Amino acid sequence: MKILISYKTILFALLFIGNIVKSQNKIDDSKLFNLWEFKKIDFSNYTYIYKRLENFDKRTSSIRFKRNGKSFAHLIKRGCGTGIIEDIQNNTLKFENVTGTWKKTSDTMITIKTLENGTLDGTFIILKLTDDELILRRNIKWNKK
Image (cartoon, rainbow, N blue to C red; front, top):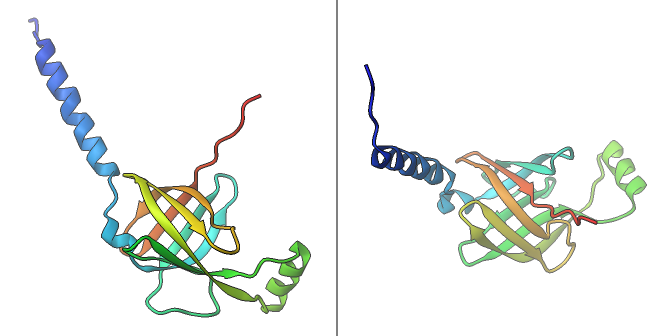
């Protein structure tokens, strides 16, 4: 018994599947407009993991994305690497408030620019965005020689 499938059927199926996959990659912007507490970074793939924070806490590193394209971050104050290690061990980290801007550059990417500090500057791929979790991967372009 032969099964005949027309090229139109195959094309329709591929387009349908492609639209499903594409729609799953779109990010719901409204979930981004929250206060996010930095939890950890995975240096193997430059992934930043944030959890939703209900209220600002001056003892944690956090970022807030506003609807108007402004951002506010509460980041660890830049300094000497060994000094930061000592501050972590002694639980005496110092934080600074950093303002900046952000914009969505595609369905799954954002670019952040800060006016001070610079540690968050760059383009990030939004890997996960739920009501309680934000996972960003720094988009790094390697120069080929």
